[in-house]
Image (tube, rainbow, N blue to C red; front, side, top):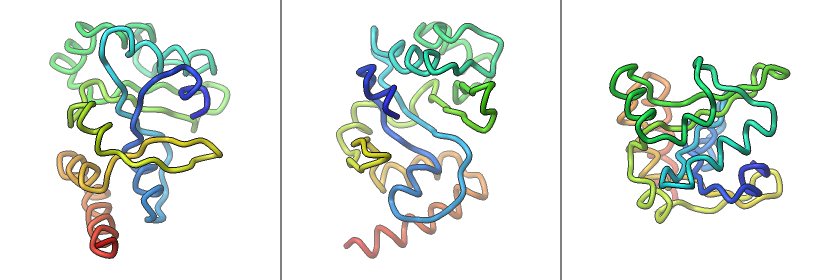
Length: 157
């Protein structure tokens, strides 16, 4: 996360890591992020991750992620939801960037909460946004996460 932070990229942690950061212990293998896709911003997280040696799983240039037309095409024609980058030296190290955010980035950012992760402050999707995103995904593990997150939200009130 430090490379992303140092790049000036704006991002919100979502997915399994966000579930863990909200207090529900579960295994997760990757880091899911919603990033600012506005002009000039979308390249920042990709550049930071490629400087770390990460490469796209798809057979495309990493910098193509910054092109709104490429992202639209990936989403509409290929059904791509996330742009995955992984580290060939450490194959389990993977970061997924949402091609199109399921919740508008500025809304997600405004409602996010700050937590400390590895000594850095990072933004994590709010419980309500995380639950909404999990509902949209609808996989069995997402439904399990919804139950756990709903219980966490109930305890918080």
